[in-house]
Length: 192
Image 1 (tube, rainbow, N blue to C red):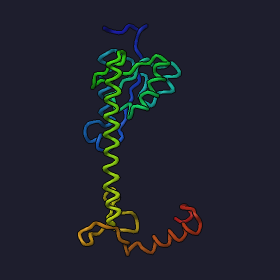
Image 2: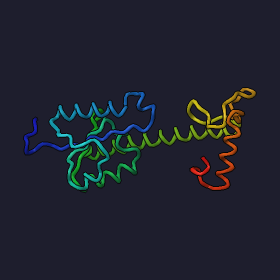
Image 3: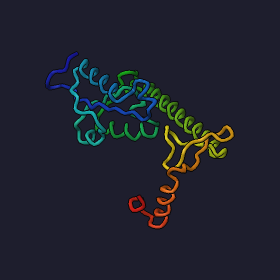
Image 4: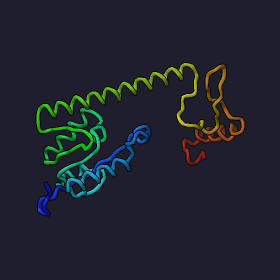
């Protein structure tokens, strides 16, 4: 069914990537935007904008919010209910284009709550695992900074089979001078 000029549905496209891993697995901002734009074209929706949009929901500028997957819009059950209350109050619907959710029925709303609870639990479990690994590294005196480079003034070395941070003799005096100034002035700009 095609929209007539008087009944064109105004859609906002919402995109989000919260981790590098999600971007690597095809959920990049560009991939989400392209998929959402194509979906809107296929369904004769007028794209209003691509952005954070609750203010425009409250201003009555949007009828429908499109996003690729549930976890691109909501991250936990609490946030879902807070946002859903705003959407309901202003008569705005949402739709995922890569998943099937029906929020007009009790079973559909239950499915959303279950899926968000599972996602929230997995995020919490992942956080606990990362904390456990980092706590263990700290207890063992291991290097636990992310990325390929050590903080300025240090370098990574393997000592007795354990990766540790040690002062870099080439930059040690500059680093020590910076921290002396930081302690004296409590001002990073002045210390730098």
